[in-house]
Image (cartoon, rainbow, N blue to C red):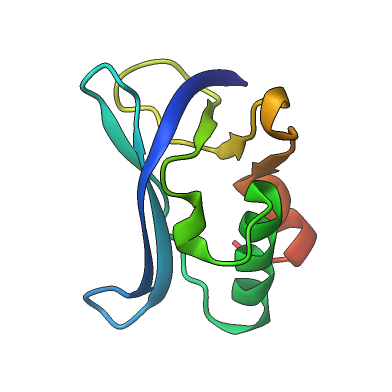
Amino acid sequence: MRQKLAKVEGVFFGKEGHGILTMNIGLDYGDGGHQSFGGISLGGKSGIDYIEKILSLFRINELDEMVGRTVYALFDSEGINATIKGLEMPSFDGGGKFVTKEWQAEMGVK
């Protein structure tokens, strides 16, 4: 997977316009580019697991503690419109990786 270094600029956890519980992590690439990771439905047991995996990846107890942290956005394609497929912590910050597709397979969700 292709990596792009970013800084977490914000996190949203709540119900979006249609009442679906979701979380978005806003990333700043430092080159004028910004993008969000997440945006999937977090209802039910799988949603709790998703949040716990993100908290573990960043080694934090509260979501807002990730703001300002450095992370790699992971992509499986090139181009300006490529979708972020996962996040990886730099080795200097403990390493670790979360890939949405792998989590979905593990949890049996789409």
